[in-house]
Amino acid sequence: MASAPFVELAAPNGIKYAQPTGLFIDNEFILSVNGESIDSIDPATEEKIVAVQAAGEADVDIAVKAAHKALKDPSWKLLPASDRGALLYKLADLIQENREVFATIDAWDNGKTYADALETDLTEAVTVIRYYAGWADKTFGQTINTNHQKFAYTIRQPIGVVGQIIPWNYPLSMATWKLGPAIACGNTVVLKAAEQTPLSILFLGTLIKKAGFPPGVVNFINGIGAVAGSALVSHALVDKVAFTGSTATARAIMGTAAKTLKNISLETGGKSPLIVFEDADIEQAVKWSHLGIMSNQGQICTATSRILVHEQVYDEFLAQFLERTKTTSKVGHQWDKDTYQGPQVSKAQYERVLEYVKIGKGEGATLSSGGEPIKVDDKDKGFYVSPTIFTDVLPTMRIWQEEIFGPVVVIAKFTEEQQAVDLANSTTYGLGAALFTEKVEKAHRVAAEIEAGMVWVNSSQDCDPRVPFGGVKQSGIGRELGEAGLEAYSQIKAVHVNLGNRL
Ligand code: ADP
Image (cartoon, rainbow, N blue to C red; front, side, top):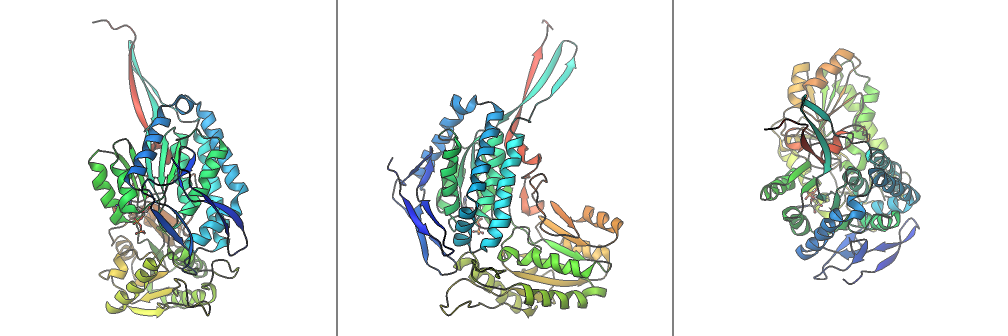
């Protein structure tokens, strides 16, 4: 297979590095079979950064077969679990050593601020890989004494070849969330990044090789979702699919995976509520709720995009929220130190946000702030939108029900606790939820009633490798992170042993 070149790149922040452009299969960067490529675009300038190889069905087949071969190879199959952990520790150290390069790549490719990529995404990537490195030799089965002549035991085994499909909002850290537990449990992996952000996984490929993973254990491909993603999900040698992305794509994946009855984990969309009770610390509620929807350009699956405020504190909250948005949400280039919000990831996302602004206005909601395209310099380029706040919203409106995936929040009023819970639960989603109260009984009572996989009390967006992450209702199936994340990548075998019960 012909090898694909590395391209020397100089990023706008002055960092220079060699960007691999191939498909990373069997620890080599190769050209795609049909020579197709996709362009990575800087959403700030709308200019091409570089083109990378795009996988077609034949390339997916090559990658999956490499992963399947590696699964059976003694160099992986018989590798002691503690050595799998050691590989992950080594990988984490290498990511840490290359933090600035990774943060540069993801800021460039995605539009997120360099500062955020460095502080949030990179810290998370390293800690998640280290967390699962520690688990590699700590997953055990059980012994079950069935009667005095027989017993049974269980062993935890890898599922096999895992196809992983990730989104564009946290390119590197989403890859680490999926790789860490899959490798800790002894699987082999073919991971596909989103076509909007193909670059950081390829750089990660260089570190997979350097860390010493046997060829074929970890393979990275780029490509169009409906082509490469779909081929991965339908491949007969893929035993499990783990996906993070939109609910619509999850439905398609579930349908395709059904044909070969694959094990699946899905982390999908959300329209997460944030409730501010009358006894809340309003200043804190404003700060967290602003972060909960406006950070990462609002491109967060757990974004608290619906804020419900008790009528007694509504005016005070709204005034402070508008003020905080005005003073904090500075829109600008992803490299500028004072930028809070960079460009949306792509033209399609930028247009989607503006379309929802139009829909909200058409539905009769009040546009209290923002909702406009923004120019950040005289070049008139980039997918920038102003942070947007809608009030006078109703649960029947599309802007209340549908995930926008941008810096757009709807703010509504309530009077009773039960009404707040009902409003919080009034969508098909159930990913995150936040609530603000100084009353401890109320906090736990409401946390139990909200239909969500995760609830934040007096906070928003907390995420820790030790704590399970995932959704209920149409926000997903299964959990990532924490000990629960291991269950997605291992299966239990029961062995019955007869000690002498002769027939
Ligand atoms: P978004 O709409 O936010 O771009 P998607 O759910 O479309 O989110 O994309 C998330 C990931 O799913 C990406 O890696 C994308 O390429 C992939 N994808 C999109 N369509 C399919 C599909 N039909 N089968 C498998 N993967 C897909």
